[in-house]
Image (cartoon, rainbow over all chains, first blue to last red; front, side):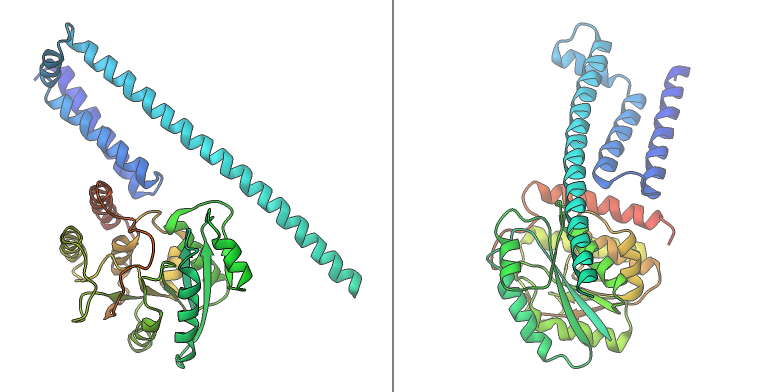
Length: 120
Length: 235
């Protein structure tokens, strides 16, 4: 085993450990937690089984195996960023809805209080 | 003793009236506790809200859709703030039989359990469920037994009663999705008593189960990991 592979394996396990600690401390929402667990296991698999990339590259007819890593990593990151944007958009929309609801409620409440005070 | 029946509902315009009226009927026969109810309307997009207002049903409208976990949790918050001793969770689709809540209450009064599960499998006349679902439930039964030593037969039943300590805990922190098996383990890890009583359940009146097809695999994976991480947490 080369040094770099040992380092890759160690980092992958450290990453998995970090994800697990975050889940146990409830810092990650469950659906996100599943995804990060999946990625950390994937990292471990590929750092141990290095020739996997060669096989995949051969299968797909890619000339330079490392290209597979870069292309798929960038692809996955793009999709995940898009997903995060969707989540953020939903949160912003819901945040606006809640603010509007609170505003309306406060107005109704103030009117009730005024009505009550004036009838005393 | 005061008990709050929490009824989460999302797009249940066809079922909610029957659910509430059967609950009111059942409530009249219960002498051992004062039973109130609260419908949580989880931002339904159909006529649920109008129906709740028109028929003067005690309800709470959420300003955004939180999903089943968040909706039920709103009920727990209300129960804690208003000094209820226990909460019963009953689905808004008519699947949970209101006339059986006295069984949950009786078990709670006699055992002081923090969790009483209305089970479809202990009794002889139980709900028929699909083969795949049976496998899932048996698998969770073994997993929960392995992790906590407690054997619960109908671990996915959402028809249950929580005691005051459990409500206080879950008002702060409750799983967003598929909370049923995970909450059993949380109660067990706190060394609180769990009771399982047999109830008869009907097939759902309207709508479809939240679990089926591809999502059943996601469900199994999600709940398995949820149980394992709950096991690792300190309570």
